[in-house]
Length: 163
Image (cartoon, rainbow, N blue to C red; front, side):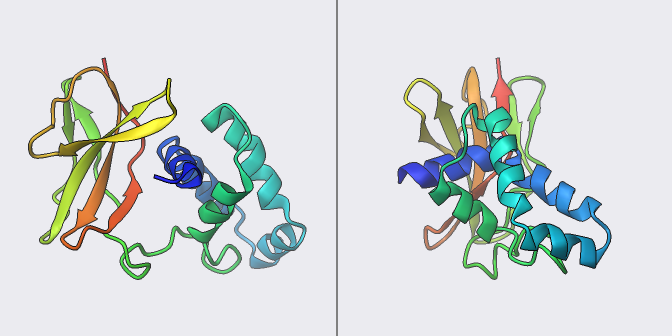
């Protein structure tokens, strides 16, 4: 996985994207959102928030990919439809049950939910396998990612911790 895509996944898993979306939605006036957008304030906001989410300032490449996920920041500040973007839907209901079991809602036909582990020492993601076969993967930080039958991988869930 390319370094900036690895960083994008980490930013999404650390909930930087959803925090930004929530801040956009909190500005209820379209004219107010337009002013904030025209002044380039969101780039600074995301950079500052990235330090808390990532532990460092997000790279320009990953920031650009993150910005692509909310294309209409003025009129419709929502995370873009993943299916329309050519990816499987976002994982719904990702959680840890009983402290040891990864779970999520059924993604539907033709979609497989994959489990990825985050290795902080190497700053890399490793595919563990399908959720059906690896729902109790042991201690660590994980994300769930939907994958289409053709192999297209979606965006990750928030981090799920198993101790």
